[in-house]
Length: 110
Ligand SMILES: [Zn+2]
Image 1: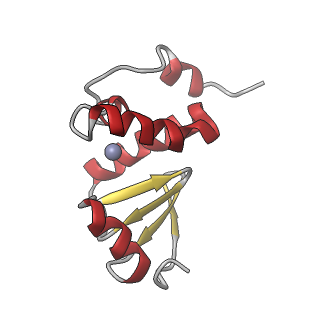
Image 2 (image 1 turned 90 degrees about the horizontal axis):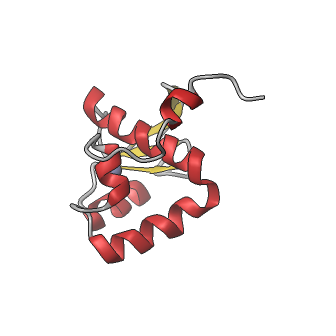
């Protein structure tokens, strides 16, 4: 499906690593190293710990925002571009969003 890459489950996400086919096309269009949709991370090559950490923040954003994540991401992208994108700044740990969310999400849900 995604270029024949076999996903592996790592750090709570499904990680697809592929530099071919659909994966390569999607990533190269934007020059991204990786894209996160929900709990699925698609990367052009095996991501290092820094990139995985970054994408992990996007996973948490998705958990907070649910289906609003993608339209909100695109809306903010149009307004701010990539470098000043609030969700990217948050993923780069340069902007605190969801105050207290990290502490809360570490506790079991009721
Ligand atoms: Zn990002």
